[in-house]
Length: 477
Image 1 (cartoon, rainbow, N blue to C red):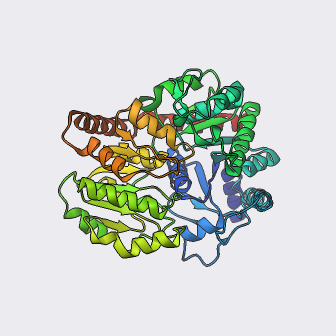
Image 2: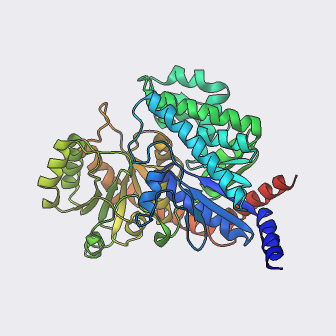
Image 3: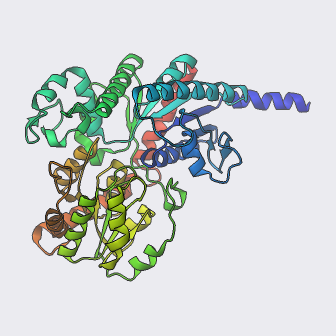
């Protein structure tokens, strides 16, 4: 009788929806993917969700795990690491390394899918963050529907779509002029400097070429398979871009921000001493300039000197995140010798949601990654956008020209933000002038808009539920 009951239980499990969410092992992908998996698991008790990230990232998420290959779980989801060929965390340096990594990743993820099926937890849908060629291959091999989790704005999704559907030559013909405008179907005209950097790169960068080819393969797959797309946005944020995609990608689900509550976030970097919390508490309301360029970009000594000069010029207290990993030796020496002698505080890492929600923070100087942009909007913090690459230029355009929730400061030919320009930009959002007051009002209005759409039972929750129902229906066909 016990055996029959156990068999019935396994049969029931086999008929459940099981989402395998696969993410790159970087901060900006891991947290949204983890939060998405948890949201999917909360839709219905019959839904299973598993998050899979590279071994190196898994080790940092679970440093006490006995084995890097060990599956673990929390109250909501399971975690299964995959190997990308670089389990020690060292990134590939050439084409041969990358080819090895793609092959290893394909084999590892394929084995995971087979193992989950053997355990009575067959994967019914793979959700991949952005362009992961190996994941496309795994979905094809196992005949599993794949959905794309687009962790950038819908405006960038539309720009890439049109780039790969007849507009690459038009964009290339304008790429050398940052102020030249390009018109794409359904979108406001975009200056070259506001387009995703990889499609307007004129340097012959191997990285840009590799990423463009990965996206090309993704969009070809999406065309062929009529892939469903989840986008971290909502109608009140990017109504124009979402409408622009309707004739081309009809199953786009706007599922809102994916920051998650602070206590549920994963940090791939050590928080260390959280003395910044006490320091923030000692500062006047809306007085602090928070500076962070995210988890990938690093600073040259020249850039650090310029930022310090800018902060001294505007005379406001600042909290500045400077990761030491990857810093040039001269920049690290400069950090050690001079940084904390002034009106600010420098930390290697912090809990960004905790900082942005603090009443003393009045401005966010940001690289304008999409996660950081959405988090600033969620707490009504006006931005000084200093975009560098990828989707960041487009995000900065949205912040400044679409929403009016901040201003953009441009980098010079060497990619450096000048201290004088930074000081002026900070004052333009924190000062007493009419423009600054208007920016702060619009940032606060965006906070209220986001609060409503992400509320339980709101449009973004319903959109995710519609996605889950659509995947369940496709499973039954």
